[in-house]
Image (cartoon, rainbow, N blue to C red; front, top):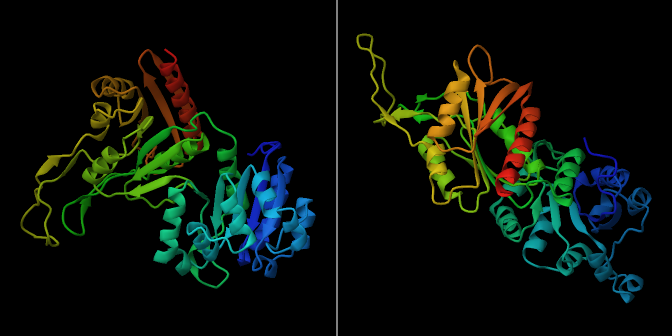
Length: 406
């Protein structure tokens, strides 16, 4: 839920480029104004083929800027005024052409010129055909922009106006508003890097079989969303799951415990908080078969297992140890004893323990946690995992600030 005056006093310059998704811009402006923002609109020539400037002027309450070569506007250096006026610039929808211009510093229309002339933070919400989005040229342009700290909102996957399916749809207006809010209103973890692991790991027996567990990844993904909502720079390292990563985070997909270990250790630098939520396999087959093993009617199959690296212990003992290391313990019995034992033996700052088995936690939409730290304990009663995640991130934030106030 976004508070009524969430954007009060913020000056947001909206750029609209030539995509069929431009029709959503009217609702976006209306919602921004409802939440207190002052909005001005600039449109590319292509955008005017999908939605009229009169519509955007009506919903924004301000004249719409259209033409870089408007004599009256440019006599007063209109594009410079726009560039200086904005607290934030949001381009939604942003076409492949627009992204290319921004990436390469072109300034041949009003939107690209204003962006080049402004020091305001820039956000883009891409919208285009899925093949255009995945094309290497577009992806390279996106990487260039991300290196310049341009924020991306989406795109999402689904049915497209061209009749195809895939990634390239403009994000829903509610999602854009929530993402914009996390950047405009600094949260308690703004400027902090948070690394989270999620899901199971798969340990190969042969090319088609593996050892795994029942983790769905839902808790870890919920934590990534909650940490992003709190303003953190989130890196989510996930095992194989059927989930979509939250918007606005860095996402890394791995399969094995060793791959997860390598990814975690390579991303520890300057990490403030590490949350080890993944259900990492303790063991892996020592010698995975290079081809599919055939069933024998006469013989049982024996596997020799080898110990996997202990990721959370390695993080807690690393020379690049984060300021707060949070572990998870999934237990079927004696939960408090095993959780507190793990907290001490692994050198953690906090541990979140949950009861599993008999339809609890793994694969479910709800969860309940018992949180322990040195000298402290808190119970989080059963609730949807995103609600639990938000409560846990709040508690982690409190513990982080308490630790650093000493």
